[in-house]
Image (cartoon, rainbow, N blue to C red; front, side, top):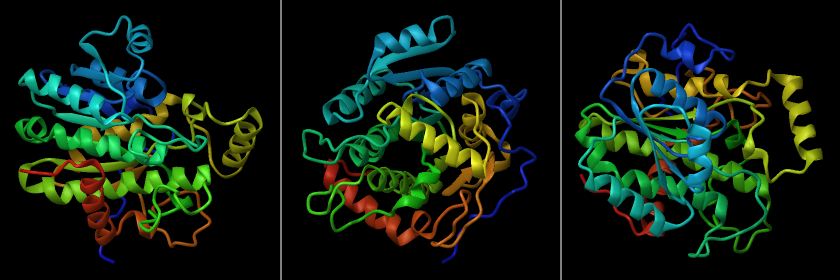
Length: 317
């Protein structure tokens, strides 16, 4: 398998913060869309981009909660969006498109993790539907605005949890196999990485580049569906092999992918700890690195085709 997954020796690391990454970079005039940009690493991503001068649009499932969390920040706009509702995705994209503005940075940050089995109105399992398909539809609807930016970047929030599972194309929505919330989460995070790979292949000639990101181990609201015991076990397990990050440290890799000049002319790579991640074997016991099924171009194309079918949204240039 040929891959561009080669670390750059960025000079940063696991404990680098989003503000340290962005440094003295200025983003005046830039417009960013950060889904879920009002809590956890999403909030820290918004803060860093705003501090650099960008205008940030924050689509939120609970706009009132978002406005309260973002109070006091300049150049932030909150808009309603439920990634699990295709009509809501289309409505947000239509409102934004009507403004005529470009999107210089799209950070597909929002997500859910380890939820009980639930399905959207189409009958699709909720983690794949929300984490991947919602962002797939959003990105394709915003494609004209991304092209208009002339140098846009799309950041897809994946996770080290992609190691739990590739995409099961035979039964992606758990209609026949027993539901496992962690397998479902891992599948959705692999989908996020494959989406960035396929999007970058389409966007390169249009100067739209895409990256996927593992933010690291962070205790955030993403864990809200886990019991206290599950949270303690997860924290203990992660702490034994790595270092837990603060939310601002967790946002650093997203911000680096969104702003770093080191990544000019690059894309389609999975990043962690503020650098491009190294490939690791499928059976690796390491917490770091990207597994083969999350950087396979053939699988990325297969997922793209299926995603167009599932959503009814087709990519057009």
